[in-house]
Amino acid sequence: MYSALTIDGKKMYHRARQGTEEQEAQEIRRKKARTAQIESLTVVVQTGINRFMLDLVCGKGSYVRVLCEDIARRLGTVATMSFLLRTGSGPFLIDKAMTLAELNELAIMERAEEALLPMDAALIHLDAVHIADAFFARLVNGNAVPAPENNHKLEGKALRVYCKDIFFGIGSCQKGFVKIDRMLREDGWESR
Image (cartoon, rainbow, N blue to C red; front, side, top):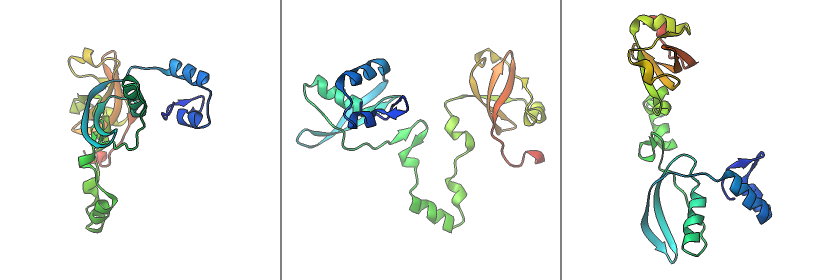
């Protein structure tokens, strides 16, 4: 009930704070129950009486507040979560993050571009397909091109599409042909 999950346009925690009746709450929970992937859960340190710092690695769709409630329920007690620090999301890790002060320092030194990630960094979870250089112009014009050999593994999947070592965008493979579905253009294509 205290998650940010939205039901009928209203976040669950708003419903809970407004004193939603328990019967409605149970119905909402029953409808939206799902399995969560918990890869690891470690007690890092006890920070006080009945206070613990946990390290959790979990999958998409996990609700940490709900996990805390579930652990407490199994222990025959109640729990609240007072602090949450996300140390990573997919390929993005906190130890690679920069503060605004660090970014400002780079900007002052006219090196702000060093902080930029390539466009495909957020799509690393998608399989990559490398198209033969001969089809570069066809891709630039948005045409479907033949998929590389062994394309049966690519059929129907969302893909990161590259040609001449340039990231073109998100595409898909249908019947042995790759088509760009979302073109994410890079500057300088005309000169290649």
